[in-house]
Image (spheres, rainbow, N blue to C red):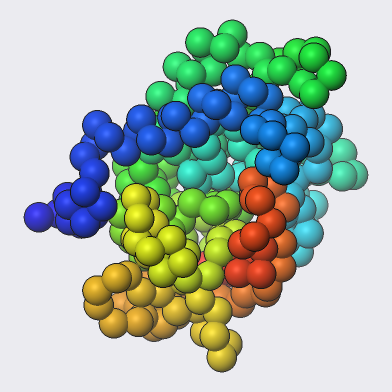
Length: 266
């Protein structure tokens, strides 16, 4: 079986059932303005994502690796969901183009169309969104759509460990980002274990002793930096612990949050 078929078998899911489970969640989110109840109110995050003056979330990393005099920056958000959390502006008059992808992009876009592309606000008003809609692309197949060395930064928020082959996804992400530029990952440590390998949660990442480790339910732990498919692409990897901006969370998992920076070899 292919890795995707193995993943579907392991989750007990099918291509037909994965989408509805995610869509059920996002349907409620969009219908209710991202507010389930008093304890689960994400409406501020919705307004931030739909505010087109929101600064790009990884602007510091983008600027630190930019070429002298560069004015236009192209960014890829992998696993963006229906509304990207990337942010839309850069300071100093610099231009930013955000491209969003998600395996369920088409389904999310139909969902947005059903709600007329609008979202309720806590005050009862309505706002237009989103600025960029997701293209239907799996993280494992980015090179089927994008050329190598296409982006100044590639990002993924709380999504890479939902993929059927996270390491292949990293290969693809490092392939489409430009040399000496960054792939930024926001994720939760040991998500598969903590979720008891339910549904999409079949994979784990952990930053330990200066190494980013990966493992699935079965199989050995792998040092990402030494994974054969990644060694020729990856120059360095570093992670830091901390709450993830732009990731919808109840707060109970924040102690496991981490942000990782992978630099493409030049």
